[in-house]
Image (cartoon, rainbow, N blue to C red; front, side, top):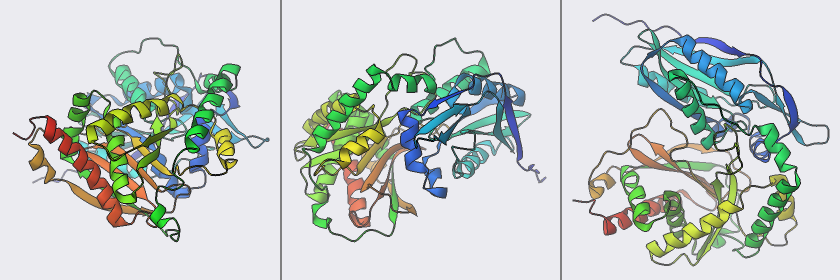
Length: 451
């Protein structure tokens, strides 16, 4: 058998010029992400945003580069760097020209997907310096005379998951044709809104809602271990569940709620089993694309809404319906100046524990076209659930646990990082399996999925 020789990676740039240049205050979203990642060092790569797509047939490399160049000129966040202003605040600086890093990996027709997955893992692990780096990198897999896979890597200061979805849709349209003209709200204009009278009123209303909830919740979600010594590490657990992938949307449709509400309800009930606290307070990541021109933008706008639900020891369908209403309240007040909110919270005598985070990322990071779970009896699918412990992170200030619901090949994954002084590994295991159990049991009880 002949040995197929694979060329080494080629590194180049997609140059751009002719865009608008300018500077101004950072947006609330840019500032919030900056504050999270700037002191994390190499661990900051965990906040990178990535997604990609296969090309059904080889696409000329110059067409891919032209599409990338058009995207960078269209979405100003992709050519924006951040800087600390003299007054201690953060500014955004939009550049008119530059060069976006492009890594080309060469593969055979049989190894395209494997090469794309490997390239994604390698480049996703490289942090961005928001003050010096362009907030976008592009990886392409070349085979059969053209590009067969494209993967985008973004700094979280430039885009959230909803923005990534927009970027991928725009890229696909450009590769196969042209984009319709749209009026996009660029980050400089968003910042101008935030400093306007209307923006300040919205910020003030959101912070009032937060403070009201913080004044009524439990002092600790983990009272039994409130005095535990700080954890040396934060373990990372990943529950990979084909059954959960099959059951979640069915339960949401049956109860006429969003899938995110089902996950939230199950997380609240499962947490109560561990902590004994009959209420849940979660910071929930919310999409804030409500202003004209925001919906199609590639920007970082999502922020945390404060979700508070009392009385979690009820029948699961009732809990899900009540969760849906509480989640809507959290979403309504999730657009605010986080620096101002932090000052407000620091002035509260006894704010409730709001150190638990939930982020439903399903559908937001289309990582290389993961296939949906194949139809199967739920009880059989449950036998294929796995729990792994990929890595341990440095302690995260102000975090008891962070839970992500995310797509995976043929499954839905629940990935969590937790303070092991508050949630030992046994509790993390119980918590994750508890979420799966509640949702799958509800699907088994209401749908004929097990036949």
